[in-house]
Amino acid sequence: MSAAHPDATSKDLLERILASLDDDKAEDVIPIDLRGRSDMADFMVICSGRSTRQVSAIAEKLVDRLKRDAGVACKVEGKETGDWVLIDAGDVIVHVFRPEVREFYQLEKMWQTPSAQAQAAKI
Image 1 (cartoon, rainbow, N blue to C red):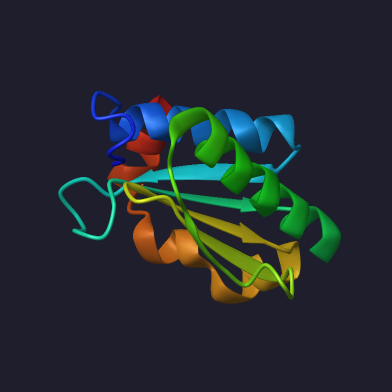
Image 2 (spheres, rainbow, N blue to C red):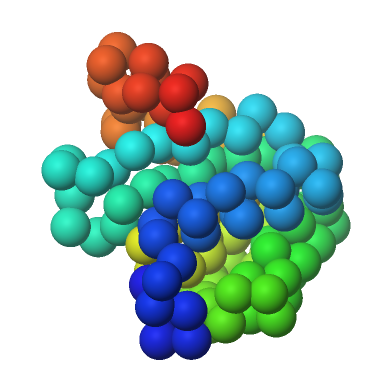
């Protein structure tokens, strides 16, 4: 994950991310366990904000919190438009969508299988 916190795990990072998203009232938050399914990350989180302003704010606050509290420098794409913001936090990839954009791309359907959905409920 990050050289700043070598003892932290991807699950710890996921928990920090989920807490931040909850604090900022992100909607329909879905964590997806990618371990053993992808080399790009251990987890993916998909969520929605109600407006472009909220999507951008959720992303900005998450990136700030991860840098400040966990020493994780994130790569961010799409914050300027606020329709779909991708946050690469290393072991966890976060997608923050406006609801209409999320519905159009349906990323969770691409990554979730019935067994993955059951696993996500346990995270």
